[in-house]
Length: 212
Image (tube, rainbow, N blue to C red):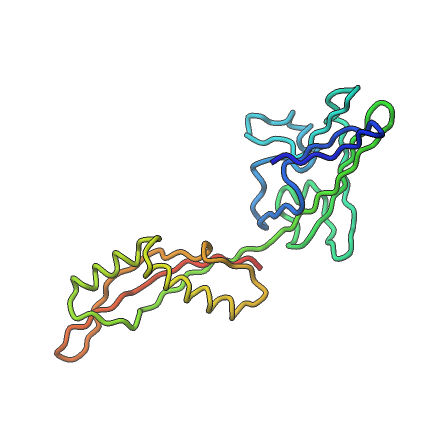
């Protein structure tokens, strides 16, 4: 949603931004939705063909569209890292918090200001494979259980993902993870030799994405 900053009492321009608060970006994954840098946007003439739009625009009651006059520079707040807006946009800045001051000015020298904060996070992905302890005496039942567990909406699927979620959360207390970051990618029925008895169980593969 658009977020607007204006001051009707002084006639300052209005700065409209796509979103509010802290924007989160994955390290190594450049944004494809909008231009954070006004310089990059100007150099590509807003690049409509790339399906990207300017993150910030500005209007003035008397001067109309003053977007081209927007400037942006980094402001170092406590705990912030140092990196240019252009490099943040390219996703090459190290994980951390970055703050930038956007300013728009009209012909009467009235200035509107807005601070954008970008949090760059690093995501790690891993695959976990294991065999469940549940035993089945025939392959038909085992295959039926595997098919059910593979369904994202099934109670068996949720139970396994919840268990993995708890283990990861306990092992990495500073990481950010939710159930939606855990996906069962494969479930198969496997034969477990057990003397003269045929025993089957389920082999499960799970993908886990963690933000650190």
